[in-house]
Image (cartoon, rainbow, N blue to C red; front, side, top):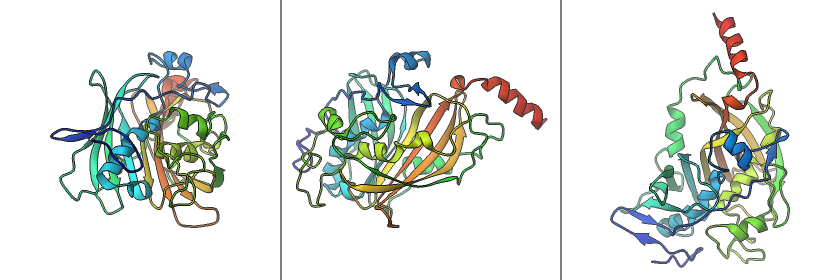
Length: 321
């Protein structure tokens, strides 16, 4: 079947799920830099960190879910919908992936979503939602279950939940980039986006008075200035998105429109290889207090990329004993 609203995307249906076409998302971050070095989206850095090649940035995959969500909830999902996922495996430039949403039984405001590669490898898993009256999202449940921050953390030892960065202003036009973290413009993204829509095109006459931003570009808007966050580690690290949630409350967000972004550390966590800082970004119109959209990102810093990690950990442990 084909959705006839915001997207002209072929959608298939089986007994348990709706799924979109196989797509090959592109990596537009090969030139991304922060802290004076290239990111994990550069092939050389990615291989140093154990990847086969540079991965596609996670939120790129959000676009493949937009037609599925609009098929379930209508185009209203663009104005008050959300995606909340944990990334499970990296997708390399050109690899084919497919998005799935659980088949609705009727009236649900939240449904499971997942993405797979051709060999069945799971790329991500989480929830899609519509409105704000549903159960906790995938990340909402994960955050609620996190233990207290490790007192012996190294990379994030100077950070505590609650740290807030005052509002910064940003605007996503078709030809402007937003700094070294995102060295591509909206026009370039739309030339490669997996799910095009006439609502995104420059000059589009929409109900909202301007073209809509794709949900994946909300990540760019919210995170573009992260390399200047006041809670950055003392030394540079190689980082990766592990979990991400984007929720539109009163949207969609629009191209060529000024917004203000406020960023807050909401949790700290870790794994054998990483230390993670969870940041929530609230997006407003300038000078207004109504939150239009939010993003939560779990940014994991690789311990191996932090100079003298083992030495500093030993010093912290010695002081604790």
